[in-house]
Amino acid sequence: MSTSEHGEKVKLHIDPTERGWIRAAILVLVVFAISVTIAGFMLGIQVPTEEQRVDPRTIENELPWSDPGVREIVAGEKYDVYLLAKMWFFDPNTVPEPDATVEIPAGAEVTFYVTSVDVQHGFKIQGTNVNFMAVPGEVSKLTTVFNEPGSYDYICTEFCGTGHASMYGTVNITE
Ligand SMILES: [Cu+2]
Image (cartoon, rainbow, N blue to C red; front, side):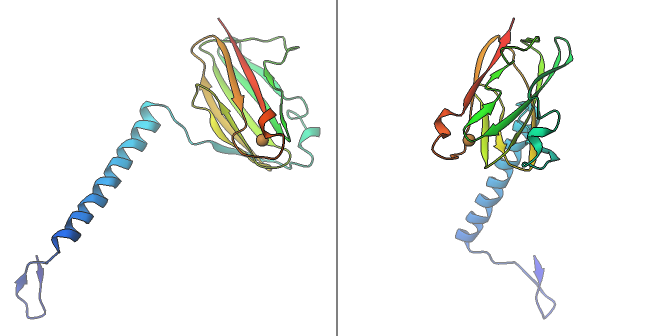
């Protein structure tokens, strides 16, 4: 109900077709809100955060990026992995690196810090929630838990040039 210029109450007329579309639009918003809530709070899907800004021209000379790879934070529980995306490989392309003294056991919480030294790359680990862009100048960060032991492949998901198809690597999770 609303009031006309003469002061009497009139019923707001909405065309039935328009009313239908308004309902549909509201329904879509409600479905989106529910989906986002489920994804964020029940499935644990996180939006990758911009952890830090860096200079892609000098990053390879500065720790921890001058020595990328696994860092054990709490043995058996918490690990950090620093990864550089370059044309056209990941450094390192095996996690833990073949010469690393640490292993990552199933059930441990692993946080990935990934950045690019050149163009825009992507970083996706098959079978996990890790899937984000690796952008020069900023560090992308995401935490995941590998519940099953085994090999998890990661790939570049942004077409980054002729060697794009060779941008892959493996995370090895032990018992
Ligand atoms: Cu790439």
